[in-house]
Length: 146
Image 1 (cartoon, rainbow, N blue to C red):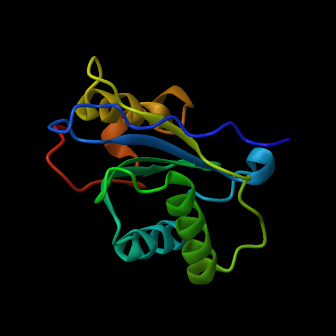
Image 2 (image 1 turned 45 degrees about the horizontal axis):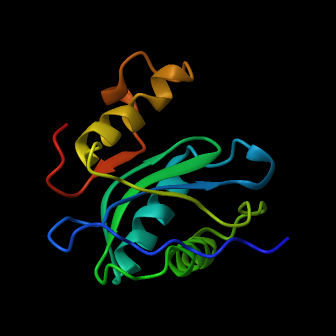
């Protein structure tokens, strides 16, 4: 099945383009939440020179990210391709990534800091930790409020 065409970024030019991205493991296998995967993820993020990663959180079966393209028209699918390729080079997983990436352009009624607070509660909602700040596989890079 063909993917629908990407809708153009119609945010005002003075508004930052920030995407909420989710990369899932095929079959939602719980293989990610470990120190070795986390280090591979951080190493991969350093290589993404066309994107500014604001925050990232790795769950056992998926990765959430808030990211902004250096060029506002930069392709999310290309970013996804390179993230997965470079992660796989660094980690050599025995599993596969799910095809594609879930992406959502943050609109004016949403802020990156609100989305980041929501993302950080993910391990708490899943019963993995009692407090969001106890989850070890999260990193905030930019000017988001914690």
